[in-house]
Length: 510
Image (cartoon, rainbow, N blue to C red; front, side, top):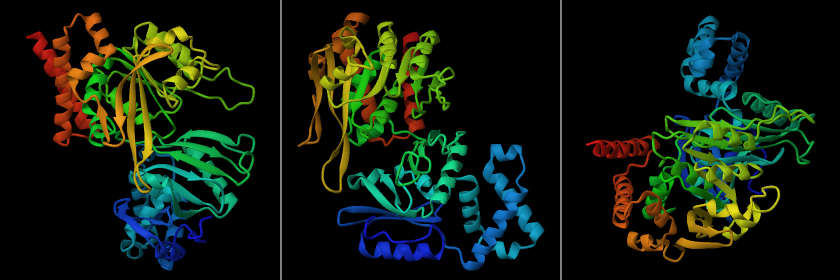
């Protein structure tokens, strides 16, 4: 354990003492509030190590006693109720009023209502000690590696420090085991000594990986949560962050509209799924889009979006009821889908996806690989076993990476975009210049001369080079205009994209 981390509880006066000891030595980097301003977050660093300190509202001894009384009463009075399913928070507030009235403790509750309601919601309806981390939109991942080890978080704005240490520590193995059982049940799954591993979709679509007791983790029970972003980053966000250029976005937009096959590759946590989701927003709003994932991470507003998620069995030796990605990709062939998206290709579903591309479906997926050569090597080797002759079905290989620019600053960039000629030949279309932090080419005319895919579009559609160039420029200017005017939000960008297609359809009809 890091020397700044000392013993402390998750709530009450001890947390105050722990926080003082932690914050006394580090350099503060940021301070902000979550949970409607009730929880203060302090981010700091000491000797190159990052810290994330949670300051929940403190309860006085009388308030703590009152909280325990209310908690017991609410647990006793809770009954099956439709409101509990539709609006749990409203149900909790109504029950709280009922309990307060019957126990005649309104005067004791009034001044502490907001704090008491926060803890009741936290412990009865939400994620307990980890609730502030779930509430914080800046947190991407949460990790607990065992007892007496501080929970760690991956912070979107302080990623250069990698994992930040928090002041949340589970001291007792039984306490952590019970907490993991609760999380598993929240996701409709079971975890026990007999079945010590579980992958769970939590409320809010957060993805959790749980190991129970010490069956497979000698340091004790463990937990990893990959948080789901309710409002994904858009193509305009990525242009404004300089992750991609607007010319790249316009180019991909044309390819997607012509049902290309894009593979987004890169290492873990490089931003592959984020880029895939933002590109999928560019698909025609009238299309039928089928997404296929092990765990639901994609989020689209298309009315014709049909998400499919695999189902795993947890019975030893039983796989008849399992529905894997391969089954779902085959199913999508019967859906008359315009575009098929596979969240991450790892196994035999790769072959089915290439069959879909060969059948004329538009396709996109993510894949763990560092460059074109290693991607081809993995695809053509067991267990994927994609024939070398299928590789040229891929239109684009997009390489995205997370790069540490300095000790305190990390960025995500699309470092290379390749157009595929065959299994052993490709053209580097876009490249990232790390010195200037820009992309080449940045001239649409140069891109038109260089791109094989744009020429294929001209050949297949009969559109002239001037007309295609005009399309490319129109879309680039459209994206630049949204970014310039601060139109970045998920719903806003999608609304403008719908308007873009509506205007074009109306003009065509006239």
